[in-house]
Image (cartoon, rainbow, N blue to C red; front, side, top):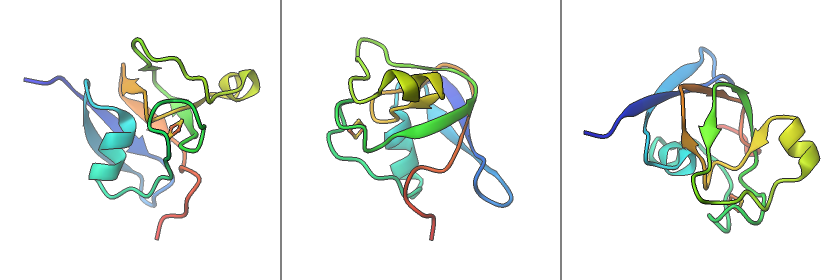
Length: 99
Ligand code: FES
């Protein structure tokens, strides 16, 4: 059984929690739940999927977030395309607008 974590979409009113299997990337989970998010390389390089982490912890496993600047890292941005949930997390709105 995959271990489940939860992702809070803090930008929805009211905020919504979605379930995320701990081995799935956060990008895969958001797309499966029809949460609009831009992505391109799906490999942590381009930075297009950049999203702000407001609470909780993610991990990248063996992947390296090359598309993230030091400044973005310091401001708690992360790359959902290569990140999995280490704990339940709370995220800000990805760069695209929710319809
Ligand atoms: S889609 Fe390119 S860094 Fe996430």
